[in-house]
Amino acid sequence: MLAVDSKGSIRSMEGQKVKVSFPFPVEPWESSDEAYERYKEVCRNDKFWRGLGPDCDSSPAIWRTWMIQQIPGRDLLEVAFEAWTLVGDLLSNAVIEFGGQPLDLTMPCRHEPELVRLKRYSQNEFFMSVDGVDLVEEERKWQEGRAKFEVAKAVDES
Image 1: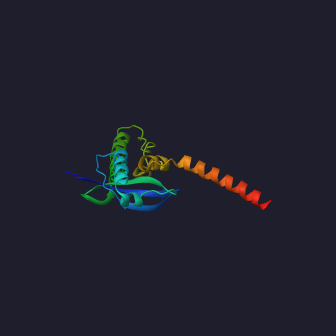
Image 2 (image 1 turned 60 degrees about the vertical axis):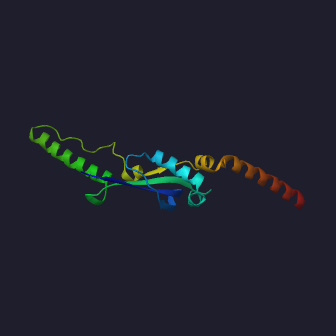
Image 3 (image 1 turned 120 degrees about the vertical axis):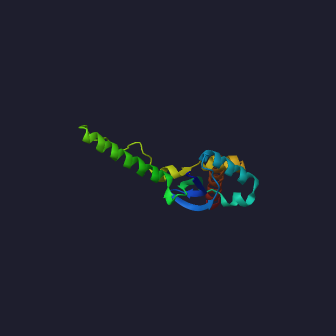
């Protein structure tokens, strides 16, 4: 029997770069969205965990890998793709032997493993859900305060 081990980590992303990453348990049958909801609940109730999470410069993300104990060091997505390719080659060769055209094995619908492993979430939604802070409103207030400061500064200088 193959046992699938799912590993997860919570990451704070700045643009395309990882700012911080730490392990977070994600079950193989659990969706990334379910794990993310659990993570937000932990952050709401534990200041230490919240301190590890996203800040005003980063957004939350979940990074997942699926491994099979019998094939250590290889992600299940890669193993499945290779297996499917081998079966496709075998079938295509059989079709050719019987006089048919080779099968199209390009698999245009295949997802890149890197894109499937990482799921990014909204920074604003995280802050609103976990901290009750609306980042858009806070930015508006900051801009308004800055504009008032600039006007006051200009008046003082004149």
